[in-house]
Amino acid sequence: MTGAAAAPRVVLVGPMGAGKTTVAGLLAERWGVPVRDTDHDAEATAGKAISEIFVDDGEEHFRALERAAVAEALAGHPGVLALGGGAVLDPGVRELLAAHRVVFLEVGLTDAVKRVGLGVGRPLLLGNVRSRIKLLLDERLPVYRSVATHTVLTDGREPADVADEVAALVEAAERSESA
Image 1 (cartoon, rainbow, N blue to C red):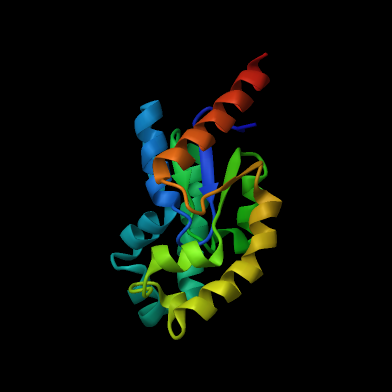
Image 2 (image 1 turned 180 degrees about the horizontal axis):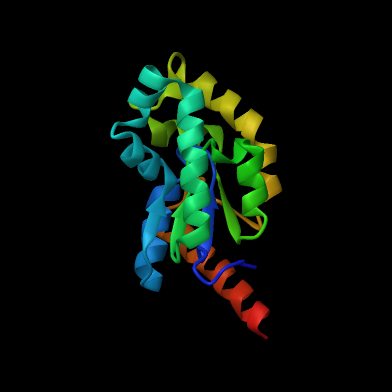
């Protein structure tokens, strides 16, 4: 399913609180490959935290940094890639993802709120955290599902269990492709 030799082995998508960064790290360790997070890439490019980018430069500027980070990572990162929660909203990103193995880490409202806490450092959660997360989940759920080749539910589960399920799906797909 992956397009280029240096393409990610798997791309993880999902909302904040789904565990993308944590699960990506576990998978990378398991497979002995590098891990990359496009939120971290955007922060490195800007030289500041995402919350500061939103305040200083606006969401549109952050989305442009994010889009560039995703395109670069999809073209040349040979490990596990975690995308920021809103990256899939960009039609260009969705088009790029079509050539890759994408796992949607699905999380329900209750678990997302518990994991995100008060949303410190998350600019889209200013105000009522629970209602903002619900709005984001409602808005983005169909988009996550549309780009995913697999979906893994994360509610009430430990990151290691989620990583085990993702690894099993990816490894089974790879065996199927090479058969």
